[in-house]
Picture 1 (cartoon, rainbow, N blue to C red):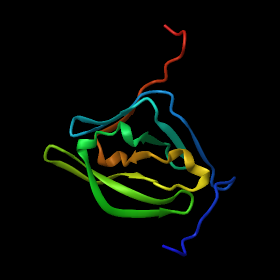
Picture 2: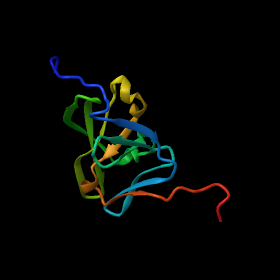
Picture 3: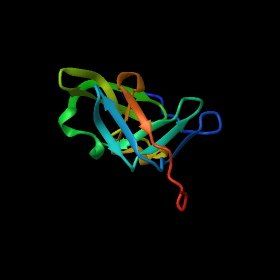
Picture 4: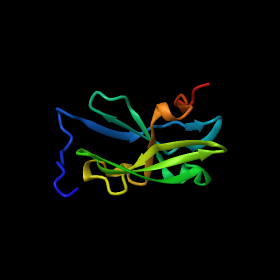
Length: 132
């Protein structure tokens, strides 16, 4: 992977990262496998927003190593994890950028999930201070 193209976000391919501001819960086979109030929302070009959850907020007992990797010219090399809940195994269901490019450095230490490989990625409505 030494000659891989590296690109910077810009007007033609914008990337923004900001705190989600609400609780994010990921379930698999009816079990909560990740839950966080410290998630980040990454918006990239015309793709749907992606929730990046701190790895510390993922159920460590469900994590399984995966040999799968991929390359994104805007973010870097992604490493993958599988999850196991009971007899259910979701292969390479979540990814992380252990050494992301500088433009997306805030996602270091966070993981994202394929929405079609888990039951749900639920983002609670943001709470408005003072609202009743």
